[in-house]
Length: 189
Image (cartoon, rainbow, N blue to C red; front, side):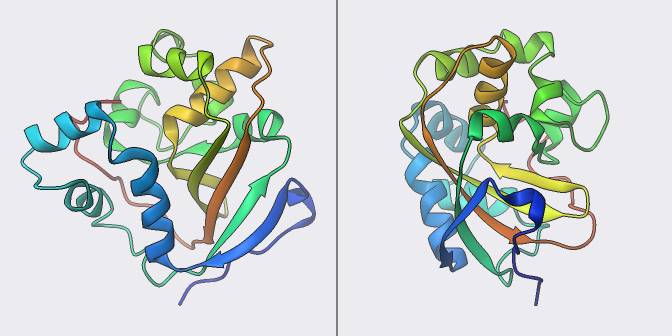
């Protein structure tokens, strides 16, 4: 059993909405990503029969099912998200983290490949009015395990002085220990 995601004084930007089961968290993730053509093409070319199979495989080394999840609304997401940490995804580590296990989105927004990433640039221009992220509260801080491109878009917009108006929610659980590296090294970012 894990520690639940608890509010700390520095988390005044996190407004609790409701507790969630893992099935609810996975459903939010599925709703936001499973119909995107680029991901459908990726998982089918990678040999997965469905989005669920692919994303379950992504998280195969992470014990997430018994964590206690809570949905929060992030107030001031434009200021908060750049300080969150990107997840330990193998392709992100190789392409953007310069070998580190995590980087803040503020750091990522300065990386030339992130700044020029077509997906991220499109998100800056057309950010959703409401979006859901998934993260883990660790001793290092909040680490995003779903919503990497959107977090980069928010951080890049902030870096460029552009305000994005959006309601940003995060499904968050407490996590102890080191996060395993996730995903396949050849996955797109």
